[in-house]
Image (cartoon, rainbow, N blue to C red; front, top):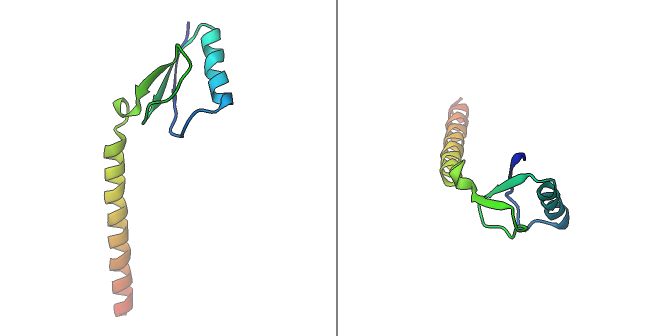
Length: 84
């Protein structure tokens, strides 16, 4: 038995994704799907909160701070350029 893991960040899984998961189960593999929100998964597929592996909120917060710093730097460069 192979232990598989996957990440899903979209909405509901479509028929192809669900068929793929069932196919892994049919081969005797175990599969865990990490997602930031609960999903309707086939019986036997394990759902885990993606925040366990990667704290998405913290990443988004850090990304926001980085974007703010980039904007501040851009304004500083523009102000210096305007001064001549």
